[in-house]
Length: 116
Image (cartoon, rainbow, N blue to C red; front, side, top):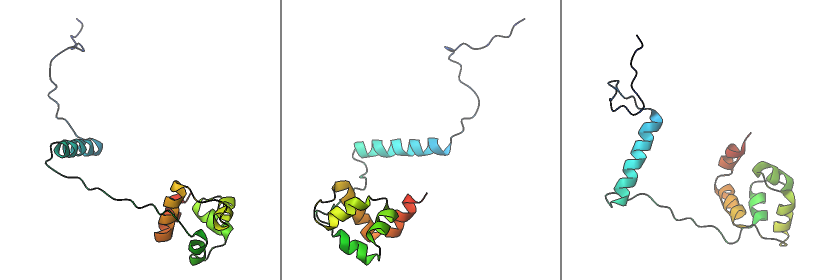
């Protein structure tokens, strides 16, 4: 005689213990934090970001002791863009200014992040 198997619509609750994973615990913690913030019970950290309007690329590069091509290779930049920035023909866009600001403060962190 064939065994009866519970259908997909069965309301029977499994008696197996529920194991949580690290991802599941992090997700639940994040959801609780979000709910607490939404209710005004907790405040989450916020950061003010200051993107420099002007960057002296030549001074930064010289401070690091790098040629234009070495600077470009070290930080994933286009050497022709560095030429144009230093000669005043172009200005770095916002994303480039953010990267240059990080390079100015933490050049080794950028190198580590971009390492193959």
